[in-house]
Image 1 (tube, rainbow, N blue to C red):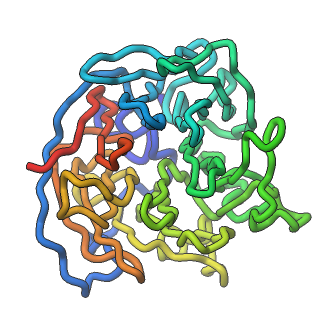
Image 2: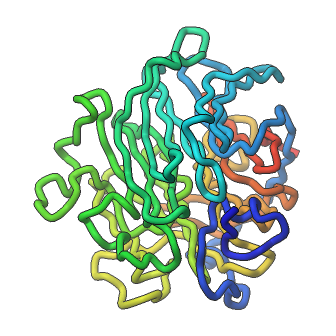
Length: 386
């Protein structure tokens, strides 16, 4: 196992996301918001209701018009959870290396539900994005695998892994900076690599995929045309606001700061989120790039045991009206779940919703916009009002 930012008991607790770094001690506590002058909303409390027990669940997706939750286990199974019953939709454990930050890390369904996309690290530690055909009953045709893209990984950590289809119907793919500590290859700021980026492709437009003509660097001969955003360290989870289409990216920090970034739906892409020159809003190896986009929210490593941000989404369901328009997020080690009200200029003062989240790895949202939480310890929880 690769130990992450700090040895906090069992190595697997932090190894999945945190990655290697130096100087694990963080700064003194400070508010984890960007607009602290704005008042907090009325406090909301939640409870975690366990609905299933899996083996190290790490990501979740919903298929259109399908009530089941599709959850990936780090070891390589896609599990279908419905009404308390757990079945296996696909098992590719023989293809996967699943130690530390490696494994089956991301899942998404095409907007029409006909195809499943997975992001995983193979036996050599390299990242694959693959496509599979789905059947009417939600199972996956194991003989239908098609490789969409592959990225060689120089180190074992910072693999990213999130997959999601945007409101535009294109597939977005998160890749970390390649690993080690401090981005030794300078991948975050280099446009000549996919590492440290979010990519945007059309997997059905051509074989193996088509690059959308309006990608921000498609006409730049010195850049990879698939790149949508760059300057990221380990964007473990990102999401799209179902109401506005804004892109929210939770980027796992290095020595001192965890950060959450926001790209408006009409931005056109091309944002530079600053790594490795910047960590959060602070200098890391150099001056702030003139085009850098600062995070809308950051919080320090160390206080309360914080080690790795777990990004969620902006809540738009109906069960918890007090949370509508709030961005939900958590931390792998600190145990809390928080919600920050979304403002035009950023976010307001976050509120703590719960303090009993054990090793959260991902949020999931069903087709009605209601949230779930996955725990590396095994449980899958439905988040409900207390």
